[in-house]
Length: 126
Image 1: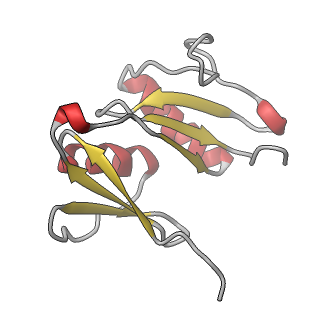
Image 2: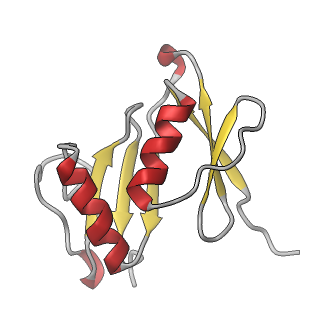
């Protein structure tokens, strides 16, 4: 049997706000609420299940998404329009810049709950 990631739970301040932010940014659809989860389905059928938890229990995580050049253009325009701080690097030294690692483009930015999101157009080492 092959092993595939099916879903992961993303702790957040407000499950609907975080799911909407993410879905709007990447032009994805919010799924049917199931219990405490608001799912957003990715192209490879993995779901991000957003769950509201107490703010003091949120541990910021890193989520990286491989997207097309056109999807990057659209998402990056939304990041800029929403005036979200963005960086070319995970250390947050190159504010207001994107990177061009591995011949693609990449950007890091926070989501509404402080998770560190990354968009890349080429896989690392690729």
